[in-house]
Length: 194
Image 1 (cartoon, rainbow, N blue to C red):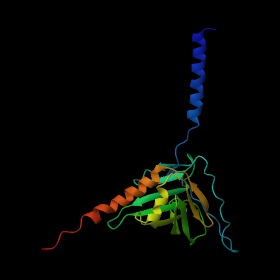
Image 2 (image 1 turned 90 degrees about the vertical axis):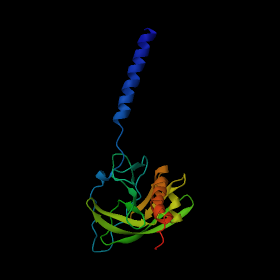
Image 3 (image 1 turned 180 degrees about the vertical axis):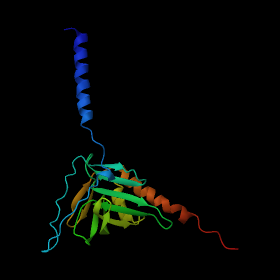
Image 4 (image 1 turned 120 degrees about the horizontal axis):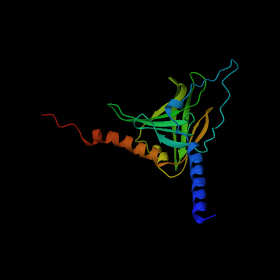
């Protein structure tokens, strides 16, 4: 066998290997994967608490909705989302935990990471994709710095398990962007009346 033949065989081998690796790729989690999930409440009491989800391979990705991030495993329903909602008043950070629970339930979302702890009231709300937990927080709240560090953040809702949010610069950048949305209103006071 000549060196040229050996080189061609090696090139073919790596080409096939690359094709196999690319075929295994999956798109990141998106809102479109949020499936309707219902838990049946029994007459004996609340539904059984959920186990913490497996987050190996979960990533943060941009949503089709501007100023919104989705967290989850590629090709699977999302686990968590954070969005900056800008209105005529102050901007808000909206947190969404895609996990079912008993209808009418209320809880606190505990965000712990990077030296900060935040407890955000969340309600179970119905959306097109089913029931999910949602709550809002002021982006100016210093506890939102939990997303600005280089370490993981945990998001826990009692009964919905703990989600470990892998480190990424995207959530911290979103918090900073959301904070900047309120700065023009604060920086430009109304002109004095004459």
